[in-house]
Image 1: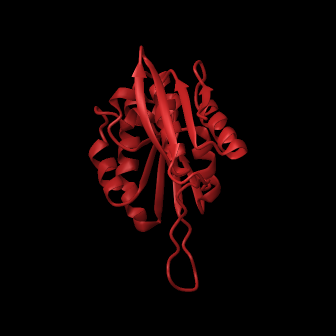
Image 2: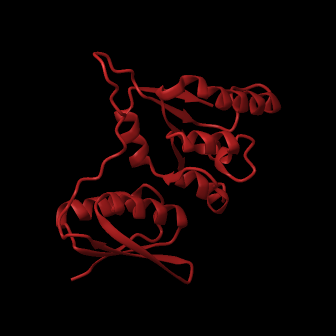
Length: 204
């Protein structure tokens, strides 16, 4: 029997947490989730995929119907990407950079814009230590088509850096459709990533 979960009217991470709770408690083979915003739809789809579900999306009158079917009827725990271990006796901590604004520092907006661009371009100097870039609040504006660092972020992603943009923030600024790099994420993923990171740096 297909389980049905109505998450309309809720913003991230509430829909993901509801789905997580249901999957962990009842382990349904088939599940239908109804959502009314694109960011939550992407987040729930990504979560269910980590739990070994095949998910198809059906849009009806501006709402998202996610139809999920477990591949083998069993449950596999979801997990955030874990930092790779390097060979040798010591392990260098993987760095998560939390970008909380489209500007760096306070005082002059134009200067703040320039400093943030320069900072994000210079993060490449971290080399393989740079693990994730997570954009929240107005920081998500740096992940859209008009971003002055879009080329750099795409290059980071190409080289294996995980890039995530807060879905609630994208929805707040009405930018979900304009995101061009990284995956849409939620607070559950962000907190999990911060827990797994060897070091968390906040800029903004």
